[in-house]
Length: 109
Image 1: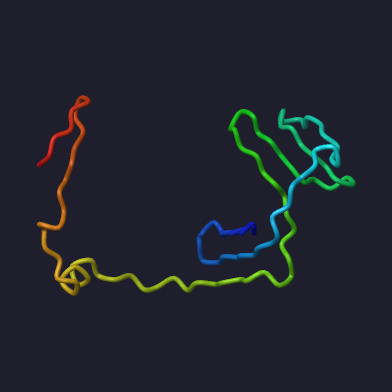
Image 2: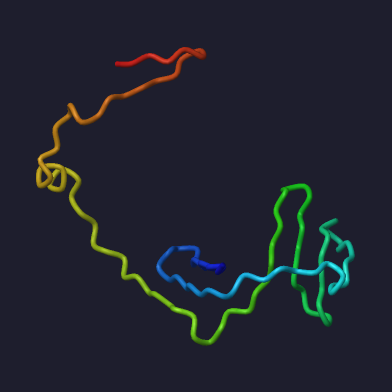
């Protein structure tokens, strides 16, 4: 079994991907403590490996990004005219049905 990690930049113009053999973690190998934000952290040799945020129910495993990780940079495309695009694909309004929720009831228009 493999673990795949996807790292995205905030503007989504740069991505990095790497994978590694999935491992089973033995909790006794790590030093566990609560940090100042009341998160449970696990360290290995003083290096942060795990963070559990109980208030957000999130568990993070910290991995180092390998030198050979795939890095993809995406050039933001020029803006496409919406009407030109819809005409180009032969858009027909019958393709879309709008569904509204009003007071717990669903109305189809």
